[in-house]
Length: 399
Ligand SMILES: *Cc1c(COP(=O)(O)O)cnc(C)c1O
Image (cartoon, rainbow, N blue to C red):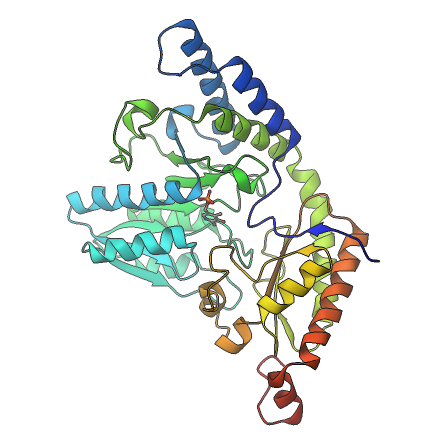
């Protein structure tokens, strides 16, 4: 039972796949030119870049020219929001709709845009962690230039009705962006069929390298670049391309998409076994819809404990987990995602996110259940809050 090591923090980052490493090494050894150079070394690099772009585009259902390579998901989100905001402003449309549980790359960019004179409506999220197309429709105004709703949430894993939200936006003539960083490589995606105008992705969330990603921008939409300089990416993002990382991203995405059905079919029963096991802990609640969630995501709140203590003790048991988002660890504020779905502060503090890898085994799931159950019981045994709850001095919030 001891000495098991389980990496259950794949929503923070995934291990780079051997196929991606091989592709990157080959690229660094054999295509080390600058893709913008006219000589043969440059042309070889340009061919590798075009090949990677074509393969990634095919996996998203878009054209290669509709992809802009970026330094990752955060840059793609910043570029999408700022680019569309400025297009909107030029037409006198300065209203943006998004949701209260987006990643900070979206929320903080929106906060900046508000300071620059834009108006932002953040839609409330239901307790099940899902935003409805009707709510998006009701929030659209004549001056709305953009709707941005994430594909799948990075903390609670809930999947949004993206195609339907996209249809609502199309009908209203409003551009639609989705932060699909948690979805690409994990869920089927077709930007055309799903009415998506802009989509952000990041390689390190699907076993590619860190520091690389892409923004899909539908043909005909011209965004002012975030990074000025050379004419790379058709003048839409300056800077010599990170070719080895882009090639590694293409290899990782091919591998993820080739095995998507198999991994999904394997993971869902294991995820549900973990959810069922952790639901047996008293005064515990699953965060987000039980079914409409990423195949590898399990997120719980346990009353009467601190998530940080739980993480440290689980680490001692060989388990790498998270209390929510990697971006907020170190801060004492409870997760904005958990608050958005209506968890009160005291409950939100006792959160745990386990994001499973596709190779997790049933034995590991059972170890996770046992380790979390024991650790929550131990932390409660030394928790003054739990003692007060047991004595009836304060009331349980989670039934
Ligand atoms: C990880 C993540 C990002 C940021 O991507 P980086 O490549 O790390 O910049 C943005 N949005 C979501 C939903 C994420 O999970």
